Length: 230
Image (cartoon, rainbow, N blue to C red; front, top):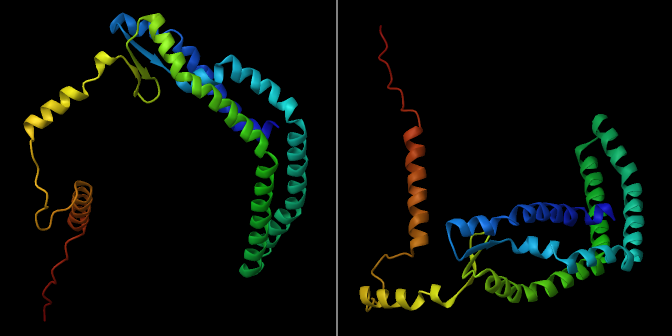
């Protein structure tokens, strides 16, 4: 179980640590920018009561799958160990490369097959975690709006990405920018000029040409031949 859930536990610990730092962040932010808040949504999810309770219940509810996965993992390890030992011994004995390659392929096939089997066994566990997370995610928007109303915040940014996750209508400048672009550029040309390329392709070509020029400039100049004496 520890091996199976280790990545998730590690992520949860990191997010929990981030959440601790985030507790005081909104107050500090309001001192410099009134009406603006910052939130870490992943930290909210993994530190929520619902998520914590589910994490405590899952090892009990899915104990058969966890025990089966652990037992099968041990069986696969026992099957692979002598193969590893033989491969290492044959490498030291300078056995033919073709033979070593066949052994390595056999080991890789067992590993891949075992991993697929373990994923199938633990699929209900992963599905449970995804289901729990999605239920919390569906309530996040409502929770953000409620928190914003209570704190008098009209703009909330995501702590990890800096993206706006909530903004009052007064922050919406779409129509203002639309009016400006219509003034600056009322119409556009429909047919591109000969040889025109999209900006991404132009930038890619420019970068390639710059790299080629730098490579040519770095190449040592050919040494002229010296005249030979009689």
